Image (cartoon, rainbow over all chains, first blue to last red; front, side):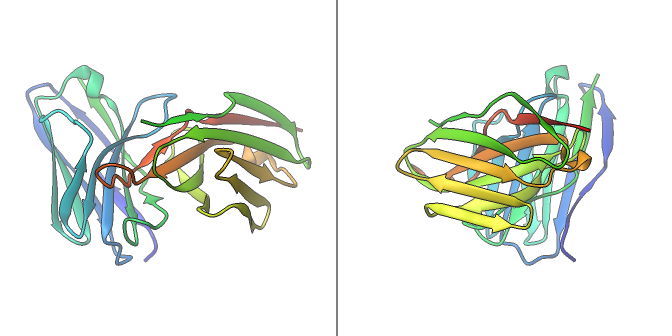
Length: 112
Length: 113
């Protein structure tokens, strides 16, 4: 298995909803990442997990809450989002903090 | 902080060669990556340079000069499917040991018949 999977592919939620994005990889990678990408913009780093520990939080608002239950899974819990949070949310993984990063297909999020 | 510059858009002809340049400024350089991204899809890894020189992978090559803060991606024998955005990204391990990637704004490559 040489891919990063993400669910759901699309998500529409209201500003009062609570939802979660899921990411999974079975390549034995020990670093996992969340990026946010707005239309016609490059991906922007949100969080980095290394060996299941949060190592970087790029000043992301607390309405985004990451969780790494084990070395294969990475979640992003969403609560009280704003319409401007609508974007493509990309998960990536790498062998370790120095390896190349492989991206999942992303979850396209729309906040109404 | 980091500053990464690459051209916004380039046009090339099927079968030809195109070079996409990227310049960067960073305080703790630890690798430069090139990704391809088709509209509506996730970025796909193309190449990685951490030492000076040329890395070749089939039709794609990437070059790095750390002293000049400069890289290029060379695409040969262009095919219509190469029409996409090409993202230059830098990994920076300065300060707190950050190792996420910082991306340039991407170069939209248009291939004409």
